[in-house]
Amino acid sequence: MNESAFIALKIKDQYKGIYCHNKGYPEHAGKILYKNYNNEEKIKKLIELGDIVHLDKSIDQPKEEDLSKNPIPGYTISYHRDYKEKWEECSPIRFQDKKSLIEYIKLDSNTKYIYVFENNEWEFTEIIEQTIENTKKLKTVLKK
Image (cartoon, rainbow, N blue to C red):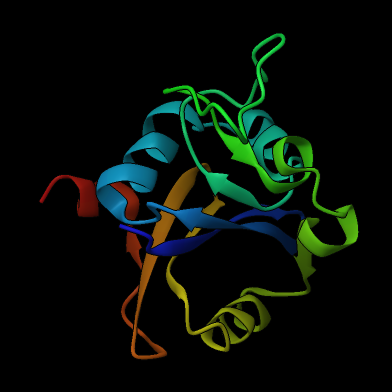
């Protein structure tokens, strides 16, 4: 399933985030973010990869492996690092506030989910037909 997501981190009074192309739904991306990217330092490293094709448990690059040609379970795939896309086209995006982040995402008809890490926890928002549904704590969404 190729439902995309946007993953963001609140840094001071701003937000910084990246696009995730594949498996952005809560049962995959949500679960991985909640279990593996649960502190600001890990999330910063994830976001510094720039836009990603696929989110997984590790952001490391296996030695002598080309993840664009040979995806390995457990490894995140980055457009810039692994597919050699231009940094300007896949670098993280900064937003002055959450409202501008959400308005930007609403314009992208492909993005279905927004994950924002702030106040030491993940928030989850679903977009249905470019309408923002209620934002919830990710942990409550995963417990359903």
